[in-house]
Image (tube, helix red, strand yellow):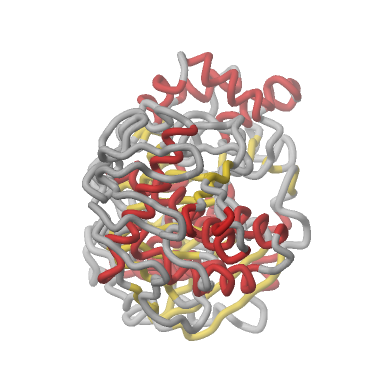
Length: 553
């Protein structure tokens, strides 16, 4: 059919891929850093400068359509003439923390927000930035007549600033004033934040065109980075994605919006017309880095140390809540290390406990989605830390699913290009608006839990038991029994019929007993001999993308 381009404007750079519309094969690529930082107040003209530099050398010659992906949660406030009233406020700007808390209370609390838009306000969201703007820059706030996010603004600029302003479901769902469940804006929430009504972009469908440039180039709907990366990876029903940055995120594709009264799940929309529930943790690779620094090594050295230990880390359990935690909601807590005995006080056991703690924390987040009916048959593991042997060896059994580690690629840009091919095909009548182009799946390495699944689930039980003893009722309901952690469910203070005793030992019961020098129970969890190790396969090329612009390592 032809060639299309995908443009991803992240917090620090612009990446462009030019692809064949039929096969998705990357023909050429471009890259340019943003000339200014990606935090605080940013002049969005910097994004256009970066785009122009990335497209130098005739990169876009022959391209018939462009898709745009961009960083989420940025706020561009414009006056009645379409002029910015101030520089853009970016997603990683924390100044709106108190404003977010005020907004949550103003609507009636976390449950009210979860029911309204599927997300409780945080400092990153545009809705909280509106309250901050009204409170701290009232003159600028009074001039605001319309709102955009970075993806919306870039599309508008590429189209020559037409009268029509557009966005897509994915970007709209990141705002805090659009409901993925209802598929509509909540202008009352804009007024709650800003103090008055404004113009909001038209939300168009995944296969729709936002318009054509003056030169006749089709611009597709575009979307946010998380949504574009999922689309570029080929994530579908039954898939979950875990992004390993300093903090962590877990998201999946689902057929309906998930209203979570606790606010743990962020109910976003994806780039295909479905939904994308997201659960965040505050502690992922920062847990590994902190442990590596304590042991005087780096991440590779920590991984090598961990592989010298055995499942269960000789009874050591690390609750990795170093920065407090979001899942479960423990904002003011600290990390906890239990199970210290003379035989467990070795570097390799602490190293493994760090990997097991990080992955169990992410498994908790994954189980939040499972507990709401999200089916998980395989897990995409993203980020530089996915290349560590210990992560690849331990993750499948702890997560209870096949683990896929994609090779490095600009997946958000690829997702934007795939969307451009979709909109182009629809405009030519060669593509269904209900079925995106079938591009090949990302090249990946696959790791199976295999025979190590029972021992992995026993390690999960050991972790859950310590977590529930230390933070009773951190997760509200559910059960965990018979040596496996049931999908998305935890029973306050109870795991099977065993309880955790001081010193990190587990009394004989559903999870089996732990004795000095043993690693995992020989009882209900299926048994595992001391000295064994989990190694579901080798590892090779580094895989990883911190999808969706989440915090990098």
